[in-house]
Length: 318
Ligand SMILES: [Cu+2]
Figure 1 (cartoon, rainbow, N blue to C red):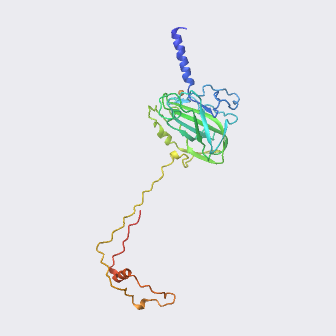
Figure 2: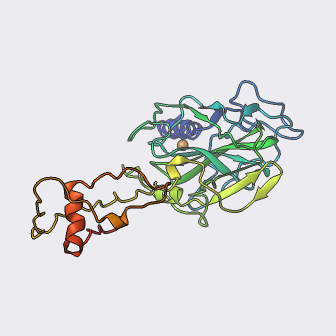
């Protein structure tokens, strides 16, 4: 082989190695992947896909359908219980392109509509800002929502928009069974970006891991049910997207109002108070209680009559 051909061959090997090093999910078992240890039997006529880790689209082009294959495994790859923690794993030695935004989602209608059950935005696979292709994390555990409907033919998807390199969209689908008692579940609809020109564009991050985050925050809420899909709005499932709690202003307590300085001095009548006239003392037996003479001050105020200052009316609290 000439030096030129050797170089060409080496370049070809390098390209092949790079192409083989994209990310794919290894657990739960992805449809038709050759990279999982215990997958259900392939459907009739299906073949193992040795390119299952390639992106299914770029910003310019849709290369493969979502999920890549429409025919599920005959049996679910895994059975999950709503409200429990599940673990999702990815192949070793994957090129992670500086991380990026990962979503994990479920479809109850065969892959037409996906509701997101977990996000790993910004630093998926890298755990922090990174210019590296080397992963620092290839396993994610998260709690499935408690309200998920049950289903034997639920599609679980991982989707990824990478931080560095070609503007690609990655997605793998696994067939799962969900055990639960919910009847419907509402959450953000899967954001599909950089998957052909009709989808939103997320540019290269260039170190800014907020790139594209606004698109994730703007995902509409979808409601899925075990028996199908009903579009609509409902409360966001994820505390991260819940509206900020309304903080009421502190009530304004008015300061005590000082009495006018020109309050007339209380006249002092030396000695015992003067009793009121006899003819206003009740005479009925029910009311004929012992009279308690008014205290000097009370008496003085009553004596002053309309000379007392008007009662102070405080402004109402807002
Ligand atoms: Cu890649």
